Image (cartoon, rainbow, N blue to C red):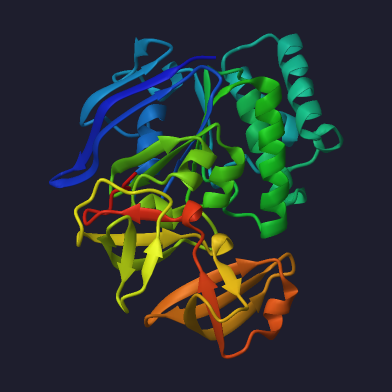
Length: 352
């Protein structure tokens, strides 16, 4: 396996800039997830690492060697795509062994490699089947098996689960996580699904508008988002935001209510800020204290309940495990524990 170093990578299509100077160091054996909305540049970056897109400027190194000018087949990486891209006329064993046969690998080694990958992925009973006789999840396993038999320096995953239903995605997430634990393979995984990012990654790279917004462990991005984009993108339901002004160690909301903070911040009194709090951290009060909100929708999820509220005319959500919330009246009062509050400045950057 190998490290991957991305240094000041830029990509432009004519006058349209897609990536704006991306710097990223992926350690040997690390599982890194690139996450962000459609059009943020994450798949373009992955394809540049694979050699499927040219680099406009900057440098990509795999295992210390510059690969900008190398063809994809010479980079010693394996890619798993959103579409399974299996050969319909070949059985599972044939699809998994195809790249090894192209390399004139000895038959004994091919048989051994396919058997080992099939055992890891639970494909042993399916080796003689053709793709049309497989489910979506089984086809994706075959696509992963085809990558594993090559024993590449790195694995690249381009939204591999997006064609599967919710239950299969959950199952395949667990299988990919387990597989990475066994192989210890350097892996880069692209997704727009923040749940996939949170559950799979050693580190998450949050991208927006062709720019890396934050790099860190899943809990670092959840607990200490660097800016409003990351705060709103990571977490489900998304973080609540309220416009406010900093006021002597607290924040003053639009109706004049002072919300206390856990500590003073390096801001001038009166400075415009955005106050954020996650729905699961909002408290409902029963003693008449707190902020009054209007209940617009009660949404049971089974595990918990999401209350859709209106606060100062803005959408606001609570996530709670208390089933008494199912009987919430037309109004509820809410409170914000100071230790769970996030404050962002006028530029949308986190203030600590």
